[in-house]
Image (cartoon, rainbow, N blue to C red; front, side, top):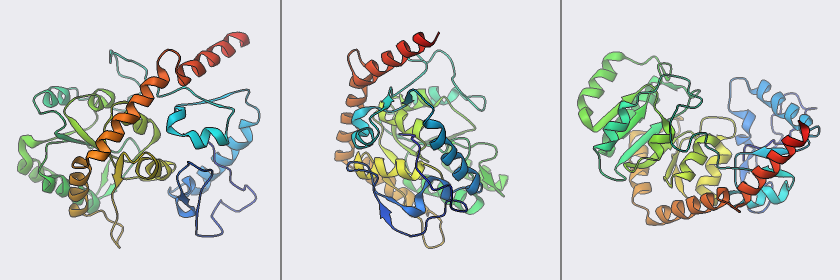
Length: 306
């Protein structure tokens, strides 16, 4: 749940006083103080202030809605019973038009996926904010090459710093038709495609729920803010994916990536759990489901305010 976290605005910038693991409530994932949402960004103090301001603003709200569903986070909704989960949300069930896109979509990737076997493709995307340095980018690319599986990789123009075009061109030549690199793609359609086997990503909440809705296993590579708590839900609570581990130098190696891809795709338990979680999500938005009923409550409240 993309919910507010209580911080102490009296501290200088929200830095934790102790390094320890804590839990908000039973059923919620454990979280280390180093992984608080404001501790992973260049604008650390600004994000901390935003969170504390949100906490103050929530007291003025008549209702708070969120893009989640009760079976995904029963502990969180027991702790915050006044929050109405109305998800998983998606704007266009039939994929008739792009929604909330930052860059022009390369829809050619859908035709490329059509030619591949069911659950064979590793889809890799890190959203619109994540930035890798040259070494990490190259290790990611080499990990996909080492895995030896078809892959669809979203590489924004500003995704990597200091990247050599010559190096990237040589990589493209080596992987040939086995890999497709695009600057942006219609993610909802990609994740719903039968050929996608797993999603390597940063675990932002909207992407996480898109994965849940399509029963796709996750390989978690969080970058900042709430992504670390979302990773914990995926790996420790739902158990629908695995997390990559960084080495002593903070880099995820090609061996780590390729090995985790194989483990995710070879785990029958993960496959069973992603299907069960998808079924729970579908029940929540169906007629009579908890999210469906909450959405109706929200609509009625809006009507009363007109």
